[in-house]
Length: 347
Image (tube, rainbow, N blue to C red; front, top):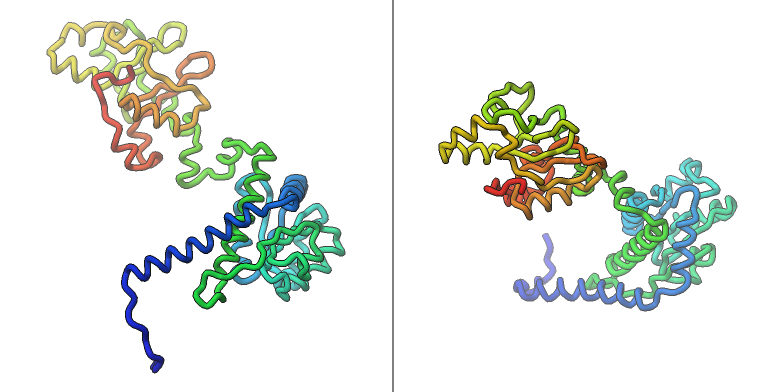
């Protein structure tokens, strides 16, 4: 049982004020670091950009957790990288290092035993070291090729002990090195997409051809075919919400949607139903080109309030169709719920 006297229960306002104090302390430390960024930062970026091997990031404890995140950011933004546990390195994992690697070592004190024990083995292999540390004159700082200093900081912990401000600084500096290097490498959204095929990021960066219904699985018709004939035709696959009308040259002449058919029935327009689909189709429909991002296509669907979007090849020939029904699960729920079929569908 804890016999220590307890302070009065803090109010919600007290908790809020303390949270704001911590965020401000960490934020101000990062802003100060930004103002003090110097030539060493540019040298670190160029070392990483010129690396023909991997950027090996190492650290232990809280710094090790930050190191893992920095390594992941480097890898996902164009710089091959992996994490090396400094203690495991002394028990065989040194074999993962190559002479064309660069090591990014994190230690606020610069005297962390597991890190300092690693340094002679790095220098013996002539592996460049980027030190992310509080003191340039520390053991780590003296051994490094480039030193990025966080400086002397007071941790945001009320006792000034728990790594907080220092790790926030390390993470911010690691992100800065990673992202500036990515820009220097001219890393493109396409490169990013190749490294993030899953999750919401992958969905945002997908190309339309990855989500469209291929032409062979779409409803198509010739302009002279009767509406009734087109819609009575059996299909081997699930119906799409629109028929693409394709002329003799294989070009898209127009589009006719289920909503268009419903309006003909509502108006009892039997003559049109028994007439050619080319006479009632929407000409010059909104389309999207092969290679377009799915996120851009979703924006078109939402802005135009349409539910089907033909996908055209570079020569203008249709190669598939994006149907909102197929996109459920690929787009955020709030985007899908905003799409409605309108009288001007595909206009």
